[in-house]
Length: 327
Image (cartoon, rainbow, N blue to C red; front, side):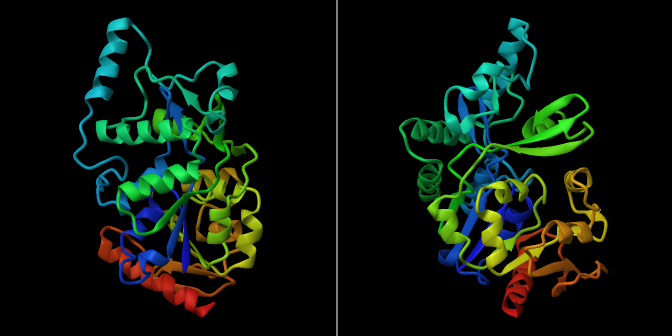
């Protein structure tokens, strides 16, 4: 058995090559939900859905979000309606008092659907409608996620990091922003002054069971993908007690993609593999790129860590298995 901690891109890319290395029936993926938002009344769980769609064989692998070949008629008409009505586009937060009313799990991250700032396809929207309806019927996010995983034919066990609300908030000179507003709405351009994980989320039984097994931290953003998972009560302690292998999202001081460097620096870490190692004191071993000359105080397995295809991901998955066997 092995458990993967997953954000939006790095770990799902790694998962695309695990077949033949880790049996799917023996894999659990704990997905970040700090990025989740309520948009136009629908509960959207982007990092859960990236794994859901990738493992379900329908992910748009060009963008690494959404469903391949999806149409966008509802999304397009929302913009047309906003223009006709003279309404400003998003991101549009709901009023402050609404941020703590309604669905508890959606606290601190409620946005209006007017000219929605996230591009949501029509089939993708059906997933959000189903998720939201099941939540409103009283099911937990873990139960809902497993129901959707069954609908997409997943062989792995996919679970959210918690059933409680926890929101990733980025501090900027323009004020605090939910991570989706920062990254999608403003394309990651505001200066990052810090990151807050707002909420007091607890682990679920599913997460506790998963963290009793060896853990793989994929090459996802250490701050806004893995950080929220670590912020859930009890996770950090369990990571310290189980074998953990981490795949660096850097080659030396060069990040593969996204704002990981800027975010690490804002949290007081060097934006590099060395900074990731400092941020991950619980990691027992690392998988680094062959060109990464960083000298770490823990065992290292080196390989080409670029992931442009499932074959690349398989190569890295084998390095991960080697690292786990060496702990």
